[in-house]
Amino acid sequence: MYLAAGLPVIVSSKTYHASLVKEHGIGLVVDDLNEIDQIFSSMTAADYQKLVDNVKPWQEAISNGFFIQRALFAMLRALELGFSDDLIKEKGIE
Image 1 (cartoon, rainbow, N blue to C red):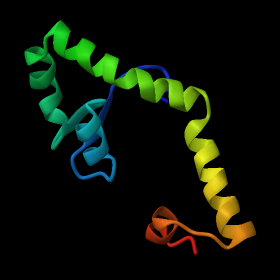
Image 2: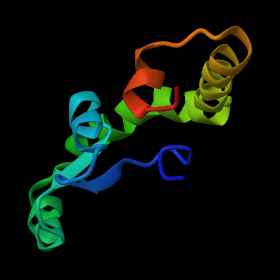
Image 3: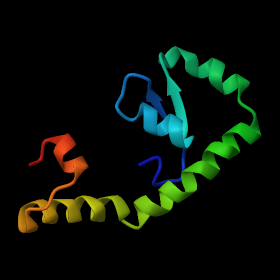
């Protein structure tokens, strides 16, 4: 929801999404939510704007249904065509 709204996200370093958020610079990754005040107080307007700029392509992709469409195509390939890819195998959908 936040990415769709064009807002950077805050995720725990222990989540699956942490590496994605960090790699693409679309939010903050924290070990403990108590770190938030310190992180925000040291963040400049330019730092925040960089996060917002990094989120824009994700916002557009989400708003246009890119990820839903990709998931549906993967499902159809697996069910209708018997074709699978690494993501399907990784998630154990086969």
